[in-house]
Image (tube, rainbow, N blue to C red; front, top):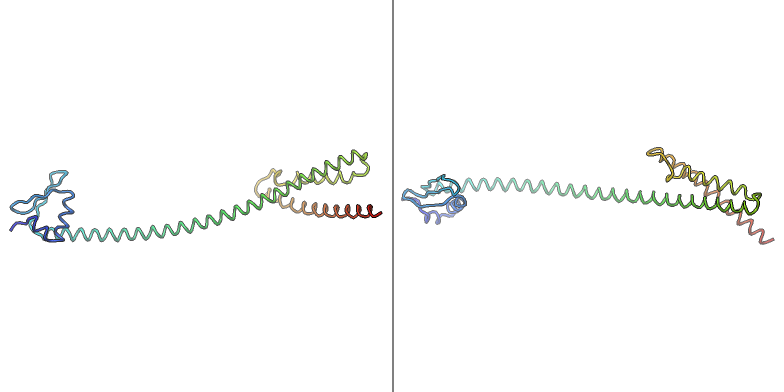
Length: 203
């Protein structure tokens, strides 16, 4: 007896295989069995027994199993890559925060040095004014000291350093050491002036 559509529809695996073929073929019943004609072209398939469709369903299942396995491997690889990228992103974010903090500290130090340089220049101006008012006899040392501070600030301050790389770093470190001593001398001078002022007021 020739294979019919009804026979195929009664068999789940054969029906599944035929429906897969019908995506690209049209089906017609003939005396000898089923004839499938490709929709894009004139290629024909002849099906005489259910076993033909059973074999096709088996092949399709194997192909689907391989594709599922391939997709699982790819999905696992993608998950691993995503976790790796996430870890790298966290490391990069931490490094960025650390670099930002270092930059902020350097900017604060430079701002402090700039303020001190401006104060030194102001002291120079004040000392010059005192020298002018007093005929220049009592504040020569103050004038020289303020002038020296101004020179050191402009000579070694990082904002005025012409060099790059290691030279700039060395100049910055020299400036730190020099300016530490300048601050110490300023504090000592301020304490001495305060003591002198107190003794004068007591007298």
